Amino acid sequence: MRGSARGSLLPLAAPVLQTTLDRRTPDRRGKVRDIYDFGDRLLIIATDRISAFDYVLASGIPDKGRVLARARELTLRLFSEGGAHAASRGIIIADTKFEFGLLPPDGRPDADRLIVIDEMLTPDSSRFWPADSYRPGGPQPSFDKQFVRDYLERIEWNKQPPVPSLPEDFVAKTREKYVEAFERLTLRELR
Image 1 (cartoon, rainbow, N blue to C red):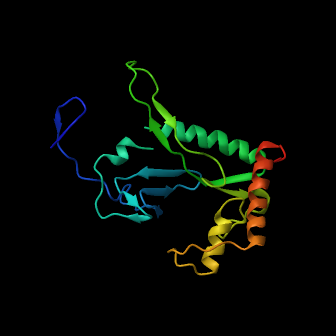
Image 2 (cartoon, rainbow, N blue to C red):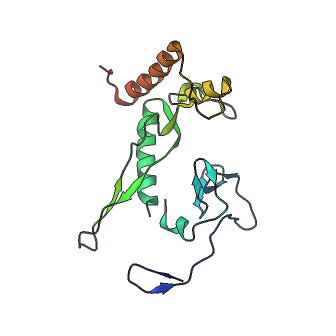
Image 3 (cartoon, helix red, strand yellow):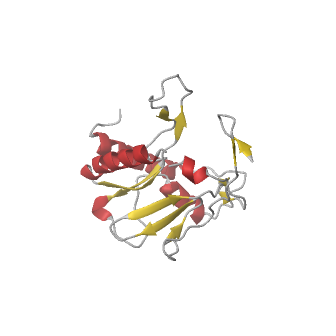
């Protein structure tokens, strides 16, 4: 049993670690989300799985999925509007993340206390692909840090200290990608 914010006791629910839809398993399982591909739409379900340091822990957190994504409506709106803007500039936002927080209560029961607490729709928080060179089913050229990840995989870094430095030409090429994304999205030069 556990206490709620109002002091009443609620039974501890079993965590939802895996989902199925009418005996269909997810088309893809992320660390904490199950993804069902319906062709023209994706259904993403936040489970009670929890990850830390890029590993899914064996224990789930009951009700974690229910507490999430409350941010669902805002997330979908931000992604829809940001994706439409990027598409108008020739960029596909293939993947992104949003991080939200809650402001402390201020006494107004109808006040929206949900706030964005981290960068969003940037090359560090998203995967940006040029629409004119997109080819389904394979790796894509990108304007994001995937370029750096690919380099680290190529040199077979073991993801442990010491952290490798990037060669100067690689730093320049990575900067080029970030600047191109900025300039395409804003229609302004970076000065």
